[in-house]
Length: 403
Image (cartoon, rainbow, N blue to C red; front, side, top):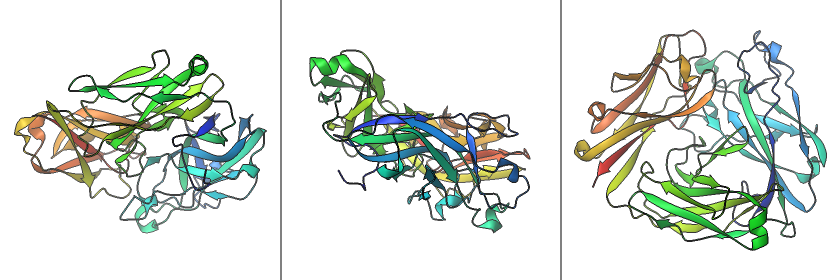
């Protein structure tokens, strides 16, 4: 098991320790995330948020541990914020890397909500109470972003401890996934033994396939899931009861050129998880198809406010004559303060999402406003406050066609 591996993979045995507050809130009515501020900032409004808090988490089992990492629920904050980092128990600072898939500008320049994974040396952790701190540098590209206030936000941190194979753990094997009709497929897990079945608390099914980029790193074909306050979201599904089987509606999952790969995270009553081997599902729908069209020319610092308008282009290269439904999917931060979200100059709705918070939203699109070829998705806001952010890698349009 190499130390360069990040995230969980088949065969891994681990336990997750979740931190999701308490957040230190200063002069702010929004109490579901915590600011991280550049300690060297000279911005008058930023100084009241310093020093950054020292947070604590209790890790009660390091026996048989072989490696550790943390996964952060990271809002990018003020565009251009550089040098994001974490420190454990007062040791040296560890870089929180940016996504290499953001571009063509520097990745810090884009608005995002990401879930980066950072390796933590085991010798920096202790059994019992641990402290961790978060920090950052100033903003880059001051001519574009330019208020000199480095800031990002944290919603939660998962400390993941991996163990060797001697650690008692639940077990099981995925049955071959099967299509139950033209839209739905079934996934089931067979426990490794009656004893393993009795100790299973939950099974999370995860899929590797192409779809909307829920974790904001810029990759569409990947293992699809994200976290909210340490809880798994946007995966294929969770089951808790025998026969440990789930039926998945694939109506809005895009067509796949490769089989979908599926694995299961099996978790027992003691909080120990094991990842199953991978099973494959050939993609064989034939009555309808769903196509996903992604953004290009996504602007840096997509934060519409003070009478600003931002937009990107989505190309729909297929004849829309057989289209039966369409959706716009986009991730936003503070979408509540928009005045207009629209396509091709036509307003779809006035606002979307949450107030000073992250949201992933799906909106039905009237087929009459879509064009074959170039389509423009835009946002506009007049507020002098924060405004709406549209997050990397930008909106997608999904279209379902009769075949």
